[in-house]
Each structure stands twice: as structure tokens, then as C-alpha cells.
Length: 191
Image 1 (cartoon, rainbow, N blue to C red):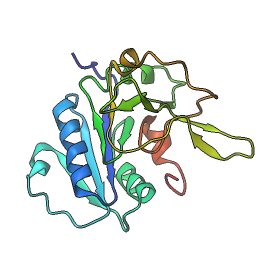
Image 2 (image 1 turned 90 degrees about the vertical axis):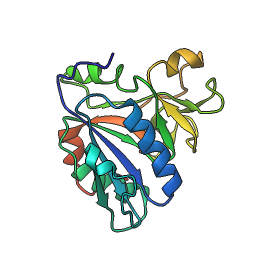
Image 3 (image 1 turned 120 degrees about the vertical axis):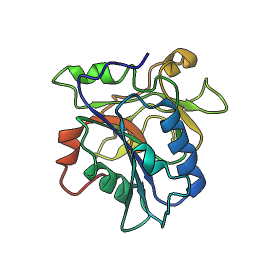
Image 4 (image 1 turned 30 degrees about the vertical axis):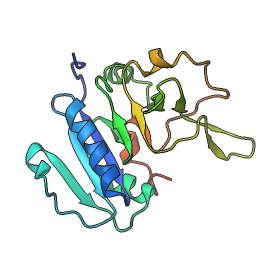
């Protein structure tokens, strides 16, 4: 059963170029979205909504160019939720994907939540466990992101992996949850 929201949720799908990846991700979000979840798809290419999902409350916003960071920034600007979840085109939401995340935002000090993402074909292989900083300030992924990931409740139970090496400082641009007011206030957008 989905978490009873004490805050509102917006899901952003940045889709810079690949229509098939966008459709796959959008379908997974629509099949598994919580009640009253705003869905925004930021597209970096022309899109005419052939499936008429805008009638289901999905908003499509054009990005000035097909770049993940630009699409994410444009999509975030179109949200109204107190929690914003990014899920890049090519990734998939699984049943209960927000169940473990939303309660964490009930704590005032939570600014971001890092999901554990596993490979679609091999649920034992972690593909994303957030970001960390290296010496000199360079950001690096704790696991290499790629296409075909699943994010959701139970991913951590299927993995049985060791904790990631390094200190997790936040989610990746491809998948993660943020406090909406803080994220929309970021000057210069997502990088």
C-alpha cells in the first residue's frame, strides 16, 4: 500500500534523446505511481503525446536542448511537489518505489534520499548507490549507472551486497529524491 503522503510528490523524467527509453520509464512510473503524484516529462526533442497520457495528468515540457542536466533542470522548474523524484529515461520505477523514500522526508533535516538501483537483468548487481566526492572535489558514482535499471522498494533486500565504499553525499542525476523547495532554488540548475 502506498505511503500516505504528508507532503506532495512530483516525479520528473528527464528525456534528452531516446524516445523508446522515455516511453519505458514513463510507463513504469504510470504503472507504479502513488495517488496524486505529479508527473513531468522534460523532453529534449519534439514530442506530440501519441498515447494522450497528458489526459492522465502527465505534463510534457520542452527543454531547449537534449541534455540530461538541461532536461532535469527544466522538469524540476515545472514541479510543485514538496518532494521531487528524478528518474532518467531508461530507468524504471518498480512497485512501491516511493514507499521507503517518502517517510524519510517527514524529518525536517532530510534534503535528499539516495535510492539503491539494481540491474534489470541481474537484481543482485548494484548499478547506482549515489554519489561521493573524490579528493579535489570531483564527483564520482559509487556504482556505474547505465540503461536498464530498476529502482524501488525491496531493491536493497534483493541485493544482499556490502555497503558502498566511500561516503554517500547524495543521489545521482539519474535517480533520486530531493526536497522540492531546495531543489527548485538551486541556481544554475542540475549539473
